[in-house]
Picture 1 (tube, rainbow, N blue to C red):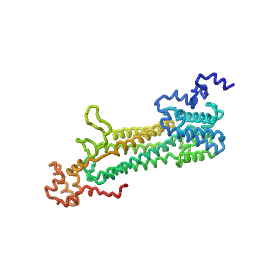
Picture 2: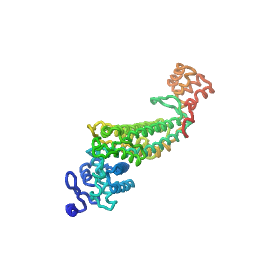
Picture 3: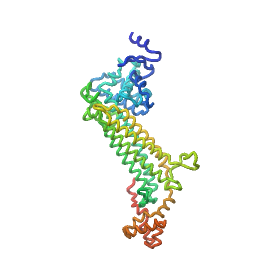
Picture 4: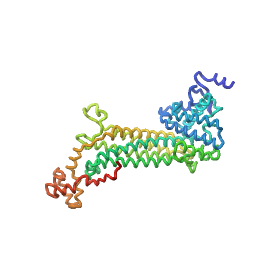
Length: 480
């Protein structure tokens, strides 16, 4: 009778659901429920839904199934409910039902709408996969079962952490490929001499290979930073529930759910040492976002160097050529721009801005909760996404095809004054300075002045001023 009455009151193509604010029609084919429906009406802001980042959907499913397993292990959940949740988890892990995770990332309520979206979808998927109908919550309930021993305040930040962890492995892998690409170029150019520059002024010789190996090495240090920063995401506050006191949580649950999360992610996830602190503290997010910013700054610096080294090609440095992948101007014929390094700079600037947003969100929480974690989740996942895509583009559309203009480099080496530094131990700083000043004053190359004044013999020039020797090149230092 009650079911019939519900059918009559629901408009065609919908089902009627009920929450704190009363009855509301939900599309009959929707796997989400009433609270998600309200959020879809209230938060039409960015048009970036939860499922824009599939790993976040998977992360939420991981958190929910881990909680269900833990609840079952401590005797709080019936095995048949766990079985239904397991089916929902497996389906979502396989990529099904992601379209039902529709709540906008921009939302109030500290992520409550996102959490209820996950609860409702997994409940209805679990119902349907066990032979029930959507909305038959007496058999699997979004609050009582999917949210058992939880609050948004512990499940939502944990899902964000799990998503960051899942995505970090992919980003690290791609950055390693990019670093290797620079290393490969370093080996290819290992004996090609060039002038190093400090403050954009001629300094002392190096090789192009040393320069590119340095790019690779610096990226490798950023990769280690990302790996270290990930460790700050491992402590989770599952079992803290609302504020950290663990209200409604059975004994042993916190340890059990962390153990399940560790199994599902393959990472050493552990319960936070202080659940009250962990419920509002954003340290893990701030540290990880800061590591992403450091990577972005490094990629930007390298990209700016590539732009400078390729400038010209005839009225700039012109030391290297970047691959031409598209015309550079709608008015200047023949112009080709360094669009991929420029793209990396655009990405880097965005990542730096996202980190500033994370800092503001982390500092703005009040008392026992931080309501601004939705911004943290969105900002960091966008940064991960942009840098992953950017690293692929930089490697495949730029670095792999860089070539060197050896004639230009040779001319610079012949005309430079910078190699005078190598003469300090032989003729002294004062005499070396005189030679440098004369070279600048007469617009002659240093080697030309040295030959004119017979400061050194040709044999001495070859021995003392060999640019590769001056670069202190040691090939054994570099990975092959």
